[in-house]
Length: 100
Image (cartoon, rainbow, N blue to C red; front, top):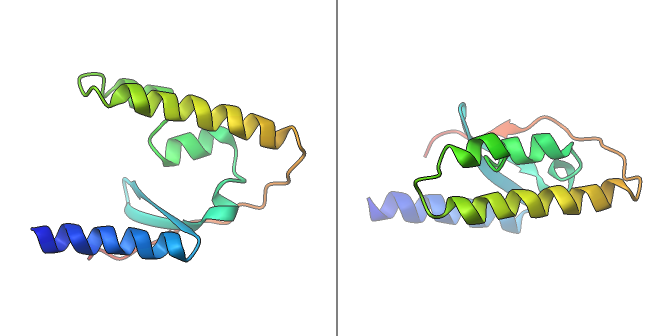
């Protein structure tokens, strides 16, 4: 079990070093170029990261929900500031990562 967790951790860290963001979806593990990922609309960012308000509030029994909710608010505010600087969105589709 530890080997699988370590492999998963190593994959996520390797992708981060490559400028990729890795996240879990209903379809499984996905990756996207971080620079392109942050250019998508705020709702898409929060949804992809499971930090949209509705999703976070479904985990209210886990004390971690408070930080998840805060992360969503911070991302939304930062994205608003970026969007106000007229950054264009050319977000490309995500690429699914095969299971380990």
